Length: 128
Image 1 (cartoon, one colour):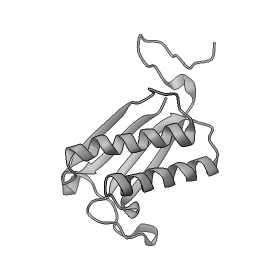
Image 2 (cartoon, helix red, strand yellow; image 1 turned 90 degrees about the vertical axis):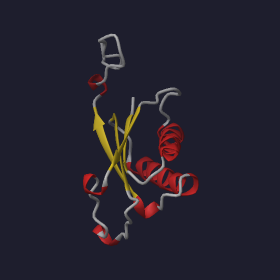
Image 3 (cartoon, helix red, strand yellow; image 1 turned 180 degrees about the vertical axis):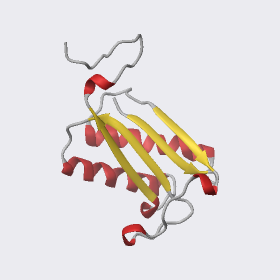
């Protein structure tokens, strides 16, 4: 059900893109308990003017290596789960990809389940 979108600076090596998606997917599995194999992701690389992230918003020092992660997913998770998810993603990216926690911006977009079709023109999660 989640759709992962990651916007990265052009300087991030392409091998890191795969690792970043893996980190996010693993956090979705462990923290949000999404179904296994529910892995859909888009990674987009940007030149400096194409990825504009404030360097000091909310007192957090960000570098030119900052990334934006947006995940569209079914609504209904509580704040504690979301906090655990944010920490898992930021920590995983720092440990496995070398992106500092302060350089990870995450946005969750929650939608009702009937807003998905995974193929065949069918709303697989829509209530009958």
